[in-house]
Every structure is written in structure tokens, then in C-alpha cells.
Image 1: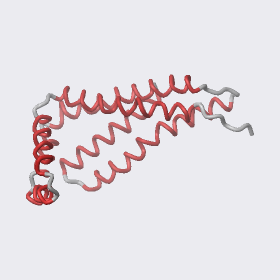
Image 2: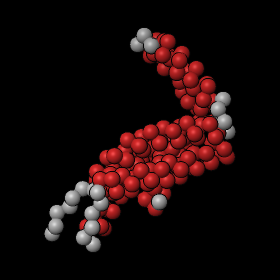
Image 3: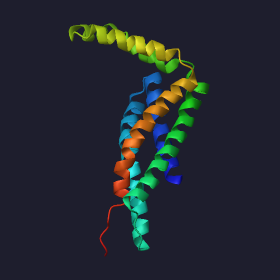
Image 4: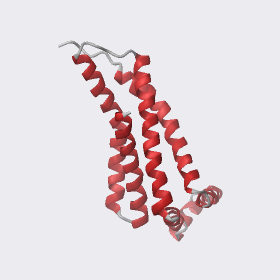
Length: 172
């Protein structure tokens, strides 16, 4: 639960830096978002190594299945924590600004011309239709969509983190 909270907070900070960076046009927040992508990816592995070392010091070791029972709930708590942050943002702070900015960026003449030159006019139309559909979703629906995305990647990452948590450390 504790480790999942830290991972969820890093995911929440990642989302907030992205959203505010897009809304305010702040390149430093977008750069922070990129940094937080790396932190958010590696943090579960670092926490699994920390748990592995703590257990190694007392002469214990997790099996792969125990590592999986560690990593899957950690990611589920992370999904819940980040979803609370995302829902709070959409419910209380956004007022449609994030998607408005994204639509504004995607409807610039240069972007439209680039898609046209690449022969992706139909894909551009589909993307714009999708963004407009997302714009009509409630804050809860937007949050649930992002929760499902986080859950899917968490399920995949759980298997990798379980391997790190159960890795046999050498005796020193």
C-alpha cells in the first residue's frame, strides 16, 4: 500500500505536469512531464529492489508468486491514487481547458497541412472526432478511461516488477 501510494503520486504528478503544461503552454512543465515519465517507469522497480534488499538483510527471499502478490496490489493502489488526483483535476480545476487547448493545437493550419501532406486526412478526421467525443465525457468518465489505461499497463508491468522483487541476491 505504501509503495503503491508513492507510485500513484508520481503518476498523478506526471498527469498534472502534462495537463498544466499543455493548458499554460509552459515548456518547463512539459519537460518535467518527460522527467516524471522516467521516474514513474523506474520507481516500481526501485521499490521492488528496496523490498528485495530489506528481505535479503534478514535472510528471506520472495518467490516469483509472492513478488507478483507484492507488485499487483502496489500497482492497483497506484491506479487508485492517480485516479483520485485525475478526477480532482477534471472535476474542480479543468473546466474543459485541457481538451480545449489540445483541440486548439490540433486545428492549427500547420498541423492540418502536415497531416494532409502525409496522406493522413482520414486519420486526422478520426482523431478530431475522438477528441471531440472525449470533450463531451464527464470528469468521472475521463478518469475511468485513464484508470483503465493505467490498469492495463500495470498488469503488464506487474510481471516485470515481480521478477525484480524475487531476484536472488548474492550473499555477501
